[in-house]
Amino acid sequence: MVNTLSFKDLIGNKSAFIAVLLLVTLVLAALIGPAFISHDPLAMDLDNLKQPPGRHHILGTDSTGRDILARLVYGSRISLSVGVLASLFSLGIGIFFGLIAGYFGGRVDMVLSQLFDVFLAFPSLLLAIGISAVMSPGLTSAMLAITLVGWAGFARLVRGITLSLKEQTYVEASRAMGASSARILYKHILPNALPLLLVAGSLRVGGFILLEAALSFLGLGVQPPTPTWGSMISLSRAYITSAPWMVIFPGLAISITVISFNILGDFLRDKLDPRMQV
Image (cartoon, rainbow, N blue to C red; front, side, top):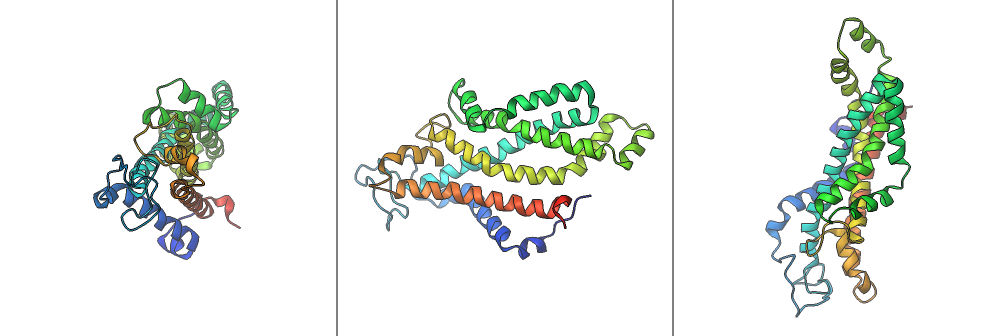
């Protein structure tokens, strides 16, 4: 059985609490931040090229005079959306195939497990690049590529959990009482697997955000002039010595977000995964 989680546990863990505060701040910035930003993230100002952080431009401007803070705020919408939605989509696909493979076993399990292995055999970034390269660059193709990269890992995890849970006494009792396989999966196995899947999903969000940034950096994600953290670094890398703030601030945004999700995932794993308990 998994353990329960309370707000008191979160307060007692300083690292996790700070990580949650940072993530809440990022989400609020993505949702309501644009209403408080006076600069247009797409508007070029040729009189203020590569301006350092100052009074009128808190984080400075880029090589075309666009306000970096405004672009970071608008870019957070895409980065967070891709990370969270890709995690949900890949988790949903992984749950479906993982439950089928783990519960029915036999030839079904063998075929699906080999399919999982095929996707897991490729490095995530290379597979995402390959998928993105055959589609038109954009938000949809980036999200689809990341989803296809991530689902097999979730499926493998769900399969292992299902193999363990289907041997439990309450599952055997439900089966003996004539419950259908669909009811057993939906009523007994899936609810008991969800806490561990929540841990896995939260851990993967940060990785998916980093993967989206890598695709945008390579020009395979959302296309300019739409701001994303990865594309901001890509467009500014030539000025890393003359105007380092153009690279530092989007890099910090990516780092803080990824680290915060990883810390939150570690905290959830420690509290919800019974294998982590002493």
